[in-house]
Length: 475
Image (cartoon, rainbow, N blue to C red; front, side, top):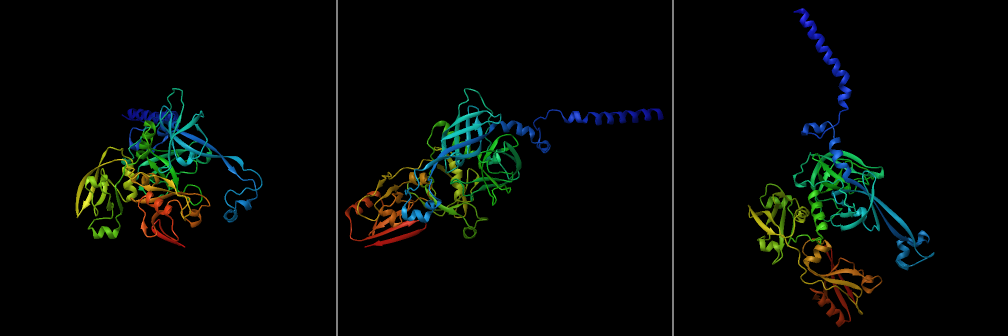
């Protein structure tokens, strides 16, 4: 019996010794994709291997002109007296301005997504793959309102690594994400973090805002790079950071994949980028409003005005209704509502969860393009009057959407002002809305043209600028 125990102990010690000897060899074995969520904590390498080849560097350059004279002549105070076109010290000289960013291959045939601010104004764009191959790129679609751009590179029929889109609506706070890009131009870098917030609408870097917030380190040069989940799919495009120093403070923002997908689909199909028309004005429900409406918490958008004949009117929305969710997804404010609808296609029906008189109901609304009614009829006013040199147009839902104006304004919109014209000297600015002239309401361009062509000895003009109404009297 003692001899058996002795041999047993020796066998156990031998196995332990073999484990110690061969453990380094086992550690060097090839890594495989994680089979469970628990295994992800061991290494992100399998996910990075699948996704990093689809993330590219983008080099954009444009030629800008600058005057060669003393800095004095670039001073705004000097320009105020001598004008923008004053030349001193010879003709303007050209210089090349370069920008650096990241991008993501979302199709194997060479479709790349990046941020619009990375390539805006560029005359030449170069896409560099992770394996250092370089391609010239052309812009298929650029949208400054979402700060997204779609590029195409010629692969000569070769299929390149690409990332599939995830459903960003399924993302939750606390999910692990990886940010892949080219920060500071040092080369491709991967950082990890978690989703720290969703549907951030107060980040003023785009008109359509509902950003994913992450604490993964995002730095200059990461713009346009990939935010990926643990399944290796694209959950967002890194777009902006909150920083007081220019470096990462652990607050990065990404455009959700569902918005990116809609932009890419428009670009590939060659469709004009037209967002659905809301057909109503509204504002976020505050704590006070929620209390008055007997709501459990402040959420949603309260409808204030419905455009007659518009999609909201046809669906049955009415002033006083509170739109709380779109297709089951809560909307915190008007920005979130616009974003939710902008990710859907025209012709679809969306389910609106609406609170009316204390009871929740569901309303189906058809998504349609904003109509150009009335036609914009853009003209430049001419003649001997204070608004000569102003380019005006009729505000229609289509023009309101195109310009990204809040609400559903109507009237005559000032698109541009000719330099040193009477309108410019009066202080009229693009974005102003002409309300009345000499006590007569201006509803259409033809009303303005008629009254200015008629002439007058004195002028009393009312203009809306933002929330203010400005009145000017000239005799």
